Structure formats: C-alpha cells, structure tokens
Length: 329
Image (cartoon, rainbow, N blue to C red; front, side, top):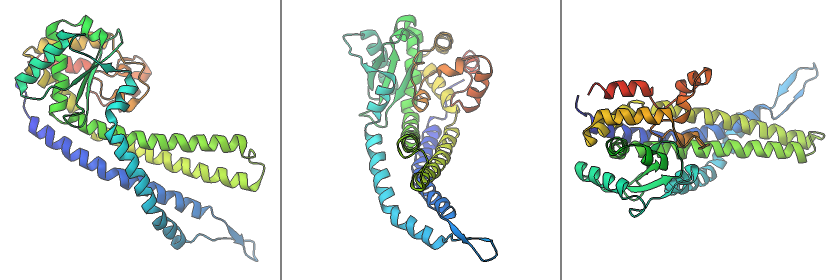
C-alpha cells in the first residue's frame, strides 16, 4: 500500500483554510446583528387602552445600529486576528510549555529529522521539546519560518530510532500536507470566540457582584444586556466548534502513511503509536484547540462514558484502527 493523494490533501486543506477565513467574519457579524436584534425585541413597548402589550420593536433601528458598528467590529476583530495569526507559534508554545531543542542537547533527534527532510526534499523545521516523561508529539506553524515539530522528553527517551523516525515522519507529513496551516487557522478562530465568551461572562459576574446585584433598574438592564451578549457569544462559539468537523480525520491516516513511507518502516510507527497510546503525554494542556494537534489526544485514551463523548467530537480517528492499517502495509 503506497502513500498517495498528497496533492489532493494539500488542495483540500488550502480550500478549507480559505473557507474558515471567510466563515470567521460572517459568524462574527451575524452574532453582532443577533445581539442588536434581541435587544430590539426586549427594548420595551407599552400597554394600550385595552391592556394589550404593544411592542416598540423597530427593525430599521436595529439595522441602523448594526451598520454603524460594522466598521469597528471589522477593525477590532481584524487586528486581533492578525496578531493571533502572527504569534501563533508563541501561543502554541505557551499552551504546552515547550522550549527550543538544540542540536547539542539532543543530536539524535536532530539527525533523524534532518535525514527525513533530505529524503522528502523539505526544509528543516524548528524543533521544540516539552519536559514531560510521557509520550507525545505534534507539528505546528503556517509557513517555513514558523513550521515546528514538538516532542516530549519521554518520547525521545522511550522510543527506539525506528519508532522515533516514524513519529517524526508523521509530523513532517502534516507540514507537507498543509495540515498545520489549517489547524492553526482553526485554533486562532476558536480562540478569539472563546475569549469573547469568557470576557462577557466575567463582565456579567462583575455586574452581578458590584453592580447592585439587580436591586435597581439600571443594574437589571445592564445584566440583561450582558446576558444577551453571552447568549450570542455562546451561539457563535458553538458554530466555531462545528468547524472542527470540517477538519477531516483522514489527515491522520494520510500522515501515518507519509510517516511510514518516509521512515520505511510502518511496523515501527505502529509500535510507536501503541506505546504513545499507553502513556500519552501533554495531558496538562488546557486548550482543547491546541490538543487537536497532538499525534494522539490524551482524552481519546480515557475509558468509560467520557471516552464515548470524546470520540464523538474528536478530531482524531481511533488509534487501534490506525495501528491496524499500518500493520497491513
């Protein structure tokens, strides 16, 4: 079984990256419009002479407020997105606590990566390491200046050369296929929305504690506005989670095939996946969007009812199935 379909995978990832970038402003603007629309619905009204409630909802006013705020929303979110996109390497590194790995510190890893890059004709990426006795690895970055392969100390110590070459080949294939560019775009996308949700929630909490605890009309009005904002932000966040389903699980099978071909030993990669699944590292990473980069997601190895729910939303295919396919090479 040969590794095929790389160009198809690259083209698909490029299309999905563009789609995510287009969806991002659309979801943001739709959420802002929903915010003004709901506020307009709750804006009040009056009772007529017969005791019937007459709503004062004015769709033209809602549209006016929305059009007025559009330039500011685009400017703020655009600048925020560009900053996050530019500093994605720092964001990912901070999330997992990685540091640069020097050739002097671990020439073995450097030599393996260098040989694999020569074999496939790609530039050498940066190499980072996380001080974690357990096993895991991932690739990140959006261009040649930021492409990075990160490994744990446990992975370097507990895998033999053939197994380590298979894992590193897997990660290099993610870079070659532009998987990392697509995933980083998704991370920035979801990260901005989740930050907005978090900020709105904190504002509601502070208003509840310090804003009169709902004892006066102004306090109640502020809380209502905050709650409407939270609902809108939560809806937007839900849609960003849906984008995770747009990231095909097939990318892991493609990377496994690429790693097996680069290293020339599919059985070694299968053995490495088995070892990693028995002791997955980077479990302390609190950012779910970053964890989707890992060769094996620690939560995917949980047992019981949580494993069922994790599998529904996982961006990785079942590890046992990946091993079975590698063993059929």
